[in-house]
Length: 256
Image 1 (cartoon, rainbow, N blue to C red):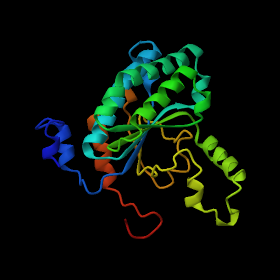
Image 2 (tube, rainbow, N blue to C red):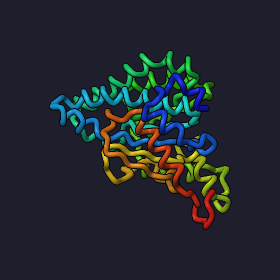
Image 3 (cartoon, helix red, strand yellow):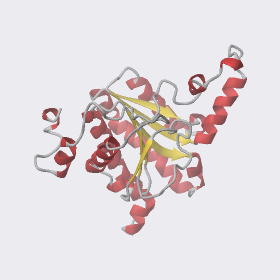
């Protein structure tokens, strides 16, 4: 596998050293990321907050490329929470515009590299032009299988669970006595997406911020002090090396 990554990691680099520590048979199938710290990154540099969001787009590319090269199947990015609407209207509008620009600029890259885009959240509340662009790229990439990039937009974990309960309450074909965890998961936004194995949070904050509350029940959590715009390939590799040092027992006494 290292031979296949020779153009992705420089010989003698920290990244190469980290890659050599990985057991490629034990990589997480699904990595989820709380991308935090864009605003503080910009403030530290006395820049407008929007520049932090622009810089964060480069980190998205690094994370996507790294997961794809390593063979990770799913990458979920917490891009816009329900709570983010509380931010200044100008900043929110800029965020949606930047997302549209990103999709228009990267759609060919997604297709060329066989990446699939999937969006989760209460999509109907997203601005029309952004929603149409998301739907376009989702449709364009729906048959791609190399890496699924899941964007959580206008997303809240509690809202997702409430929405699932509403679907269950109106499903006339469901025998309520047969409802279990597996069936409940089929009513979530993440249907057909496996639960995350690894949750990464940037900026050093020690909370999950209403993100994938059901799905991260047994996820390993890795925190970095780096703000999201500074998150690079080596940080993701560090998270993976640390992940493989842990024993995942899922409540059992033996690791799996």
